[in-house]
Length: 113
Length: 111
Figure (cartoon, rainbow over the protein chains, first blue to last red):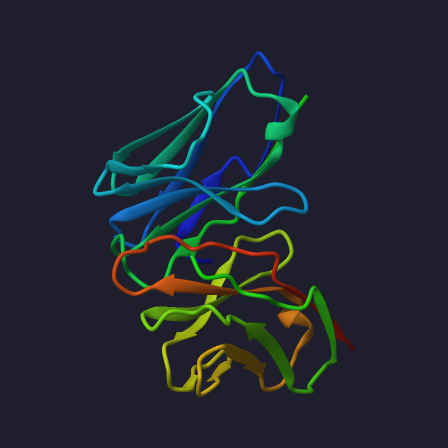
């Protein structure tokens, strides 16, 4: 238990669906991150938030839309995804943007049909 | 960003020490060496980090070569629970919040 929770743990959706992934951290951290881990590929950083402001959008397609309503919660809104978007989506948090350690949640396994 | 090179996989026997190598020949003077690991069906977890001197914590030890072009993560007594993918990551001290993951080393622990 790292103090970072993600829901749902598994999600299957069609290409025309709209769904959201939720991340919550109970650590009092100010920075939060979304990563994507595809099969047989390294983790890729998608988005970074610091004090609820987005500081990184790593060339991610617009069908992925992040939201950070407060420092404890991070969402990833999904719409019109493609099968190649199937992956493990990981949320992480850190005390501050340049703090040494990031704490990861268990991830949401997304399958797009 | 400076890159790291790790073996794809390693095997160990339970309760024996494990030495996981990492090469980073293009490391800069301000890059910290971080290690994370990812257990099956979990997100990555922090293991240890260092700059120049060897480091110890409850999980592992980090041995850093004098020229800093390589490092070794040492698990003193491997357990079955240590079976995971281990990532060696360089991170700039002053400006980078990014963890750039490579392919890592998959550690198999035999009972």
